[in-house]
Length: 269
Image (cartoon, rainbow, N blue to C red):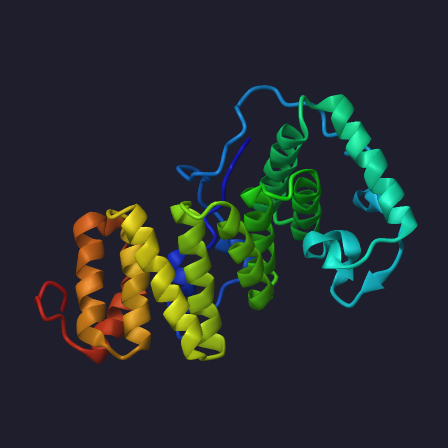
């Protein structure tokens, strides 16, 4: 099943005073409608290395404080040992025998990564996204997936860095852009740095330029202005969200906004 995960369940990230959730609760919605190429829903080739442990792509047993090199984003972005290079050559040769192209193989491993994210197997997912990147270093899905994994690992700066790399490959992907803005809002709530909020707002405005009826982007812009203490503007964006899609309105956030300032349109009390 090829499933793209929306990065964050709105009610779980909206504001720091909302209830914290366990990481695996944060990715639940169906992947769809984005600009990244989706693999056809036909029978897929057998994953070349599924009969071997994930670490078999590298015989380097070195471990870091954050886990094995295979589960670090982009294999740790460090020089490779001779053993690692040899293992990668064998892996790429296996893929060349099993897929029509490395691009197709990259899409396949990214799809497997999303499946593992859905199952809560984050390290295995990270490894599959790394393999996807190894096969095609311009596959936005590989970076997007690593961003999701590291968001769920609560390593937000790393998640932001990976999502930005994804946007560099797919700068018109509204869902990816909105995900990045959402993580930046979350990071701002943890460590208030004004540039994070500025960036998040800019990304959300870009998302709306690309997709003017994107209710999720409007609701997140409302949060941005709430955090800026500009409650009139927060209400304005919240009402635009309501006009587009009432089903996504977050009632917990609504109550917090009402506590700061009554609804100027008197719709919500």
